[in-house]
Length: 225
Ligand SMILES: Nc1ncnc2c1ncn2[C@@H]1O[C@H](COP(=O)(O)OP(=O)(O)O)[C@@H](O)[C@H]1O
Ligand SMILES: [Mg+2]
Image: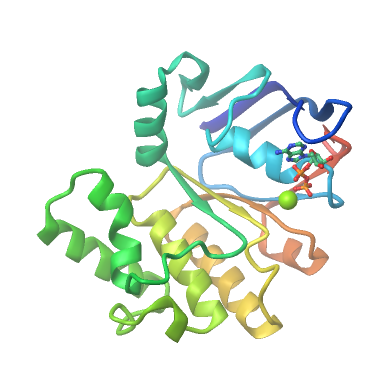
């Protein structure tokens, strides 16, 4: 079953530069439920821009993104935010954990935003920390964790609401090789054991061994389909 289908996505940036930047030039792709897919391409090829459009963090100038059969271009702003909270997890390169909150509090944020009762939040957060090998670290502040632990914490936050889709933008770019391996193994484990669908941007060729399929962007166009 297709969990995501993007059709003819165009993105043009008008800000910053004198000339508009045509960052995505008609990208179409689909993800099957349960796939682990890598998105590769040189710096500036449009990988982050594509992830933003697919994760509903931005709106394309042209084209449509269907998620689980829903035409997301038809959603109102409020519906879009709620749809994203309920269906999409996103992992950023730099963790984006709030430094003054504990790991437990950081991971609980999406559930609190969804209005879940606290006893249920507690159960889900503990369960998710365990899935990522972070049990016992919930009371630590992000500053007390290693890079790999922080990134696994941000993955925990991205999946705690059990999203249908998980996106990650160069999640290992700031990590040493041991931490990178832990993070990639964590993704692989989520995919194999729990059937989590994942689209991961990477520029490390060795990361491709972890995934089912590789998509390559070049100058805003997918070239290997
Ligand atoms: N907010 C923005 N405003 C203007 N141009 C942007 C913006 N974000 C990205 N770009 C441009 O769009 C192109 C694709 O960028 P990006 O998606 O970040 O590529 P990648 O993630 O593959 O490095 C680049 O030419 C970049 O400079
Ligand atoms: Mg990028």
